Image (cartoon, rainbow, N blue to C red; front, side):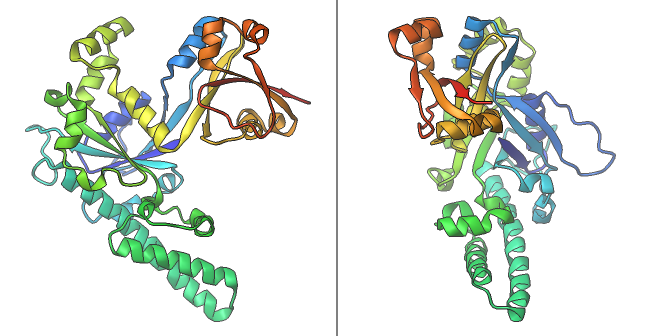
Length: 357
């Protein structure tokens, strides 16, 4: 799973990127370049399995983040970075903190306005892509007539009209055929959008209320859009504490867990992903797959040879395994099921794949 981090200059997005990934971007020597890092998705279920099996390796699911240079008004063309085009989703960092030392590029703090500006730059980028492709298609269709060119032109024109009217492509109805045609265009407004509100410490104890105060009403409930709230300075402070100190600090703030943990789970959910788990003495691991994935395709997430040689999946829900205490007890009680290729994997399934070869 990969997210591109976008945001206006001085929104705190690079600080957030560093907190998420542990990667400290160095000086770019004047160059505006992207930075890449990965973050582990917290999963208490995997932690419980690791405590049960004491494996040699503990491997959480990961999110790959690409932090692109800060956006300036009218700078949509700077978003045409190859790293951003391949992302599964976009994380838009929006500033909601005031600071005399760090003045806002637009003069004052206004999260709804800033999100509008970011969305506009995404739309401008998509409009440029659609317009250029339609010009090339027009020339190609003068040379030869082909049904596939007509279908592509109609799909791209549908997108051009939408973005020209200010409608993100994630909000328009596309047929399966149109989605297939548009897959290679990497339109930015077609990607799921995780809006990350970066608040000041005075709002850190009321993160849910911060979203309401930000004025994001027009995006609330929009398809392909989710929200998360962080306080970067506070998260930086928490990151330097021991686990026990973190727990005590969060309890004192009235918060269930770190905002960064909730952000990663929100990113995971926005893309429609779930985790199945594998457990043993060698490794306990979480595997990311789209919801609705069949057992045989889930096997392919581990290795294509397992998918090709798939025989059966030994499946037990996480909670059932924890309550039983071991797979051996699950087998005795009959709660360890044998499932075939078409079984739809559920979030939290602990699976062992039987395969040939």
